Amino acid sequence: MTNVFNAIGLWFQKKVVDPLGVILRKGAEPKQLAFSTALGFVLGVFPICGVTFFLCGMAIALLGSFCHAPTVMLSNFVATPIELSLMVPFLRLGEAISGGDHFPLTTDALKKILTGHASREVLESIYHALLGWLVASPFIVIALYILCLPIFKILIVRFNPPLSSL
Image (tube, one colour):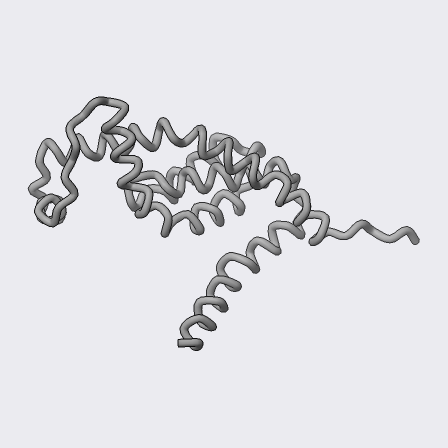
């Protein structure tokens, strides 16, 4: 069992921690890193699987120098496992906002989706999940920005010590 934890730890080090260290040593601004992290995360939890990479690419192209592309993509990558866990809350939020019918999450509904026999209810549930994400996204971005800004200020100082006077 410890081999599994070691393997996960090594994978996390290689895929998340090491790239973050490279990003911090490049000298980006804490505000830009905090915004890029929040943006990448919120786009990474978009409730339609498989499109988050393209959404991040479009955001990077549109925002240009306002965001830090590697940080957006890294936080999108980190958010991927969380994406699936937030689909149901986004769905329920969208149903509550629109007053739509409660979509039953059953194996029958999943079977219809997988076999291509998606009904109107399934399409409505996708609409509700998108609506829930759209409403929650600004709050998620703001909360993550507020959380990440002091963290990045500390990390940048730690990874970029001041130059000693000669």
